[in-house]
Length: 517
Ligand code: UN1
Image (cartoon, rainbow, N blue to C red; front, side, top):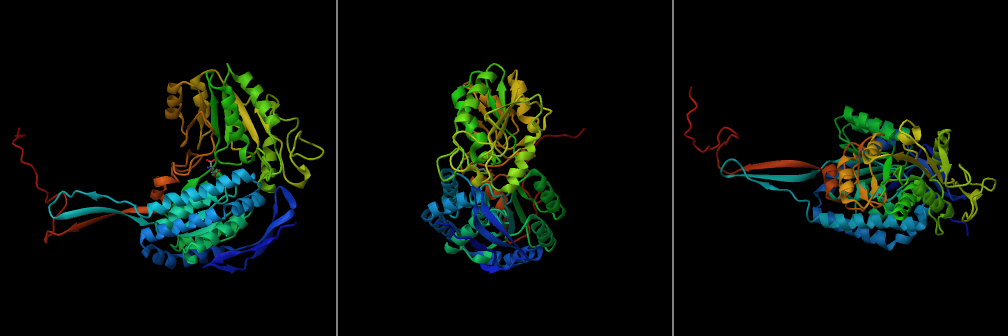
């Protein structure tokens, strides 16, 4: 039975508002299924949403934190009750295999569970004063209005990493989801409203990048936005950081990755292959935590490559509602971007992992493909061996089902290759040597390190984020994200009845040393 096309628009104070142009989003696994028709807003609408959020933030932050936490708890229960429907919508909209989509929705639930309880903590400290009859305290205060711009590869989990703690801490949010994932965003906004969180505290703006950038500039200039959260490419992150810098706003940036996976000679090779398969090809390589470059010690390189190639050849690719390693690309735009990387396969490289590269079609088939390749946007998995530090395939994020493999003659050379591209999001090492594992963790610049585990698949309550080209050091998730969504305020209360001056009216312990010369 054909599924319904969802008619979508921005929601300002919960009410749909007309846009300036309409786009259609097809199901990337089934292009004749139009998932949504979405009205995209202009810059003025984005700026207006930010302005409307200013007042609602004041009201929302006056709600006690445990009450805000209870609403987050309700949100978690609503998402739980709708887990299968939300996961099915993720799969329909962006082609993520259904099992993975269920995991993504679970990540939202885990985030709600964590922050529901945080409503009863949000701890500050008491601090001793240097003077009598004076009390010192610290309080976490909300930052204000937070503009959140998210990608569509994790169209509900990653937004929840921003929205849930931001709301718990008493902020209002203006959320601009990816244009190609508007339906799951709309569904999540409806879950939030159903949890009793005021609609005006979550303004949903469906817009393209240009309208968002222009609208954000206006809102920052008007002083209506105090924080920007962005998950997406390093290039866009850089321009958002520049815009924020102009307005003295510190953004939270979660950008691209070139996540290295090292395989040392003593590694369990089958485990390393399993990890590389999931890291490299899960979500069709379209995670920011996807394997960016496998760095394999020369002693085990050929054996690893043989086993990895065999695993990739056997892997099921295709219909994301069936049991597959990966489904389609997120949208045509991502297929186009990915195919451009294939042009950077150089003559000195060795390609393995599939009989063909590029788009999977009836003319360029893949053995064992699950479903009809011509129905959607599917790409062959590709392993490129012989990649070196000078290659673009080593230096830049490729965001698709391709795994470059480099060799290293020593641990130090492998560590150098793990860092030299300048990204620093996630990383992995396969070894049985605890000392090598910890030397790697100390030496790698990545914000996240896996030992004998995949580069992707971080748990929802550990700090998530990167350094270098992968971000600005901000961390999401767990208690660490509280530093992004709150600001410390220090309060001193003097009940001595007189003006006591810090540093000057401080009693000192007399010393009888004589320093006269
Ligand atoms: C992303 O791709 O932006 O660690 C986030 C992971 C997921 C999140 C990825 N939990 O792979």
